[in-house]
Length: 304
Image (cartoon, rainbow, N blue to C red; front, top):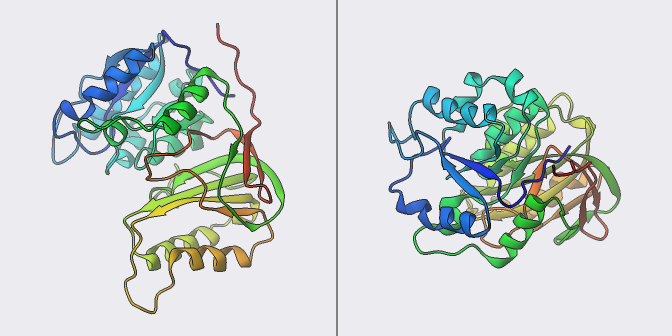
């Protein structure tokens, strides 16, 4: 079930991955959330810096669990991505999280936290804004990104159209993703989700094309990959070639999809780009690949 976050709600801010260089990194993002009507509560270790991380794994987990335990906190925002959220996963109380579902909001390295928590509890998160990425110092969130995010928070997500058809067809399943590298780093751990009856949403940034190909091969060799019902490839940005004879990412995607008998689209409006959609990780969605259309099908809890 999708849990909206009404305006006026308290929302918690954590830094589960890399540390912030300065409070200025998220100042404008916090102000924007407040202007949208949310009441911001900072975690104790948001601005800490230990070995490039925002506190020890135990401290970062403590901030997350404090907000899951607080019934007044309706959503948990990641301040930034980078690296390190995976360290936190073994330290979370999944029984408590399962009894207190609320969206974890962010993308990029936040994928580890969103997918890991979903795998253990079924908690649905929102792959949406990252305060540092979308605001930075003096930057402003893109209107397209803001509109999609606020509709998701209000519990009125609109169907998303965009991209290009690779394999036509219609499929329904739970949306899993989003960062390919981070998702595949969870393979073989207790935090890797079941792929049965899923729609995958995959994107990446700053990789070599051969690494994308290798990660997709690993994904395809997962024991339950046959349960995948459809794939949405988002934006793959700043992808370089390691050798002149290497495939580019478009050819890699086309070759990968050629051997699949499921709906596939590419160039979907999600990824490390400023104009992107917010999507519910773990929610039931329908993919109409011929029309490049993604619809949320899961139940939406009525606000109280």
